[in-house]
Length: 234
Image (tube, rainbow, N blue to C red; front, side, top):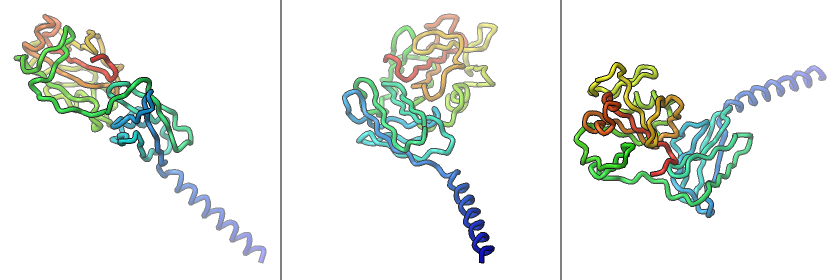
């Protein structure tokens, strides 16, 4: 009799351990609420996990719901106007975020391509007034969540650009200089490198070549890459 009881207890312990092991790999359900400094809901803000876009956005009441993998460390909320807020994933299942100031509804408005303005660092001009080539991507699109670096993002999404490792060459640009590297302009400022820019912080990327890059003189001979970051002044 005692032997049977012991045997049953052993079976119960084994079953419990197997069940616990299976549950360990299950995703964790997380819900949250996002408001601004006026306590108004933040609508259509993107939800991040460990700095990567998930494709989830906040609803009309500022709520969101998603499942995260075990081992995920941070959950964040990304807006195109007020930047990013992040919280550590520490066992809680509910997270509340409050942005400073007022946050408008996050929406990608449709603009006539000809009326779109291009920030060339020295001011803004209408795209239809530029005679050279201009390519642009909207970095806030959730489909860019998989990119690990700015170079991967440019390689995969920007047409007419060759990227090898961290070396970038704009096809069709007139290489009058020994280097084939384009000029990098981030938020209107010329920079020597873009390697420290994270894809999820990018609002847009624009490529100029030919006469569109002529305003930069000889520095723009190899083309120009204009990068605008989320939270930068319009």
